[in-house]
Amino acid sequence: MKKTIVAALAASTLATGAQAQEVQLQAASCFPQGTFFSQRFEKMIEEVNEKGEGLVSINYVGGAPAIGSQLTVVQKVAQGIYDLNSCTGSYYQNVVPEADAWKLLEKTPAEIRENGGWDYMNEIHNEKNLEVLSRHHYGTKFHLFLAEDSAIDSPDLSGLHLRTAPTYTNFFKSLGATTQDTNVQQIFTLMENGTVKGYGWPVLGHQPGWETVTKYRVDPGFYDVDLMIMANKRVWDGLPEEVQTLIEDAALALEEDAVANDAALNEQVAAKQVENGFEVIEFTGEEREQWLNAARNAGWEGVNNIAPETGPKLREYFAND
Image (spheres, rainbow, N blue to C red):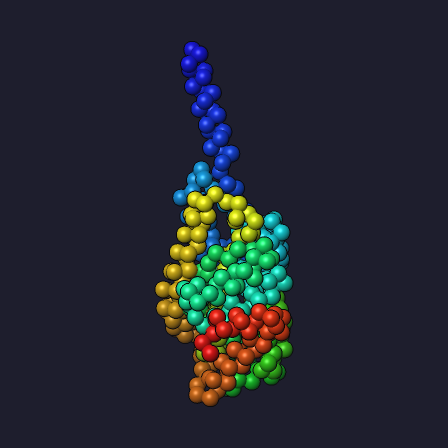
C-alpha cells in the first residue's frame, strides 16, 4: 500500500514538473485573423504547438484591428505584452524606423543572410528588444488598383485620392496623388462610396467584395511584400534551446517556401484576376522605368530621411545597385 502511494505521489510530482516546464508564449498578427497575410503565421503556430506539445504552447490572440491598431502590435512585442509576432515593416516604423527598408529588398533573404545584411538589420532590431526570425512572404509585388472611372494612361497620379498604407504613401504622393491611410477592412467601403479612387495592394490577399469596386490593375508591380516573424528578444534569449530550434525551423521553412513558390503563385492569381474582369494598365518602355524608378527613389528617400545613419548601409546590403 505504501509503495502504491509513493508511486502515485512520484507520478503526480513528475506530471506537475512537466507541466511547469512547458513554455507559454503569446502571439499576435498585424493583419486580421484568418486573412491571407496572417494565415502562414497561424499555420506555423499550429505546427509548433503540435510538434512541441508538452514543451511549448503558443496562444494566438488574433490580429489587428480586432486586438488594436496594426501600428501598436510590434510595440507590444517589444514591451513584452506579446512574445511572437508577424508584421510588415511599414507597420512598425514607430519602433524600428529602418523596418521600412524590408520592402526594398532586391536580393533573396538567403543572400542577405550571406552578405551580412540580415545580421545588420537584426542588430538594429535587437536594440529595440526584438529578434527577427524569418520573412514568410517574398516575391510578391504591390500594385495600384483603380475604380472604373479612374483609369490612367501615364505614371501621373494627379487628381487621384488613394487609400494607402505607410508602405507606398511616399511613392503615390511623389506622382501627384493625395492619400488617406486606413486599415485594410475599410478599403471596400471607401471604394464603394467613392471616397477613394484606388488603393495599393498585392494581387494576393484580396478580400471578398473588392472585385466589385475595382476595375483596373496597374502593372508592373513595385516593392516586395515583407512579412516578418519576430520575437521579444529578452523572451527569445531565455527560451530553452530546443524551443528556439523548433520555432526557428518552422519560421525558416515558411521563408524557404515563399522564396520557392510566391512568384509563381502571383502569376497565377494575376491571370485569374484578368479572367474575372480586371483590366490591366501596363506601363512599358520609358513609362515603366519612370514608374519603377519613382517607387524605388521614394522608398529609399523615405528610409534615409528617418534613418540617415543606417539607411545608406542597408541599401548596400539590400539593393542591386
